[in-house]
Image 1: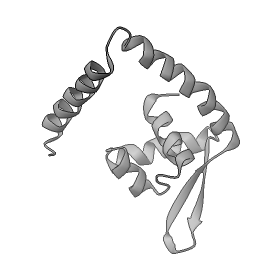
Image 2: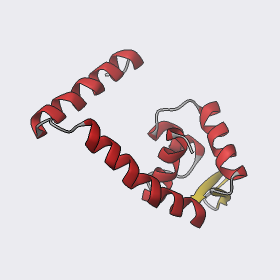
Image 3: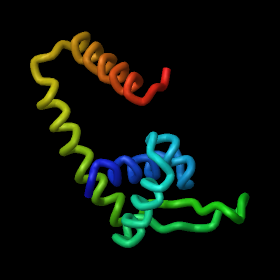
Length: 112
């Protein structure tokens, strides 16, 4: 499972978004890329899509139990990797590093 798929599953688990449009906006992905990601997750039985009762044209995705189990295994490994990468940095240095990365990303995306 790739980083993009993990991010989608985490967003679904946390209730941050559930439609393709919401997920694409939240994760700053293009709509076609999100459509492909959701299709792969659905083929892998990691999500299921249901029609939105409030908007008949929209579908809401939800993570399956299989996905939630995979996510519960992947998140600690990701946290361990982050801890290893930031070993030896003070909290202030880590915050500055994250801030620099966010600025680089904003520069590359032409977003304020």
